[in-house]
Image (cartoon, rainbow, N blue to C red):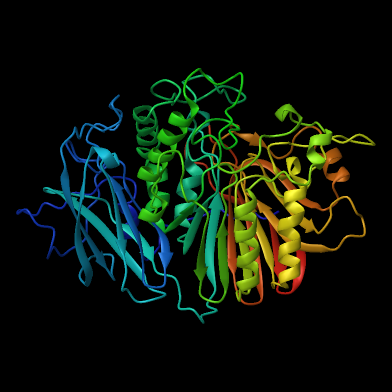
Length: 533
């Protein structure tokens, strides 16, 4: 396998990238950001008193706009979760430019934020040109944020190729976020995060092999203040800030954004602390929205959040972003890994819920995209972990709900949609699999492909393989690849194919690791399944 170590020394965006890892301060007098020219100069850390210690982000790209995000925090780790901003309100100005030095300002505006929003800003822009790259920044008082790079999606008929990276599972204690930095250096058009953006545990409660390298602040997150503080700690990480500032994001949560293995209104028992789970769920969802570049349409109402949605990329790709937590039935088999039980075979049980299943089916029927992509959280393909005649599955994944999986696959087949690709996180390792219409039938056709990203840090340094991997792969011949290092997946979508590179960092317990490609696959148009590149 060829090492593909990244280097960005000669990038045309060197000026921008210099400002991605820390706040930038423009020494310009006067109260208004409007009319400023010149590039933002980087400082090694956010200036004292700066409210932009958590960086900037963009997301939810559309043909005419996107969301620009920041969250104000002068004291990010304050126990009240308000980042030292108190109960007052702040007017925040933003600028969007077509060049990274802000000589060509396209749009300006103002937003007001306060404690009810966790001092976050979600500026929804519209009326922009399609398929364009833009740069943005914020100002509060005389403090100016880092510069971020974003873009609009192409127009509806476009088949222009694009690059997208996706990843999951960043446990702050388990390692350094170097993989985020390497992902930022890809200068991709889009980044997907498919769950476990942060972890709920108190310091030392979830220990990586070989030990943790840094600690969470605060107790296990159960209150809104707890969750806000935890997100702030993660977002002070320079490598995570770099990834957010490098491209627009699409995000979905998994379980650790609230509590391990939660299912609708069912909490993890008996490991969860006592308390009111609906209140905890509402707090976790509110904090998630506050800290992600999401639209107002996704803002929670109590313990409910409309997260599943579709985002198109011209006629080339439709992203169907799923929610596999809020509507699922409780996990079968007592939620014990590597088990099997009769409850699994109950056809009525659903992972995304019946309404979302119908929404997916309707999306497939209406789709005219070359590639239909499910951006979702847990392993979609069947994985039998027990060698020989017995069977053992992960009941927290789609294997705990095979009837639900069959309905989703059948809805795609019946719609005669063109190409299906499933993007997955959760399992802290790279996997690639062919999706069969029925996994228990050896003669069943391959109808799609699944790409599973490893974690950013969860699980520590990892290894090239694990004990029992060869047996698991032999038991599941539709699985084409496995690697237990940390990293992300880089994809390139075009009219003729999707190319996927499984990127790894060899270590996370110390910073500065290079990124290398461990395997590459191609999915050809109208040819379901993975081809080794």
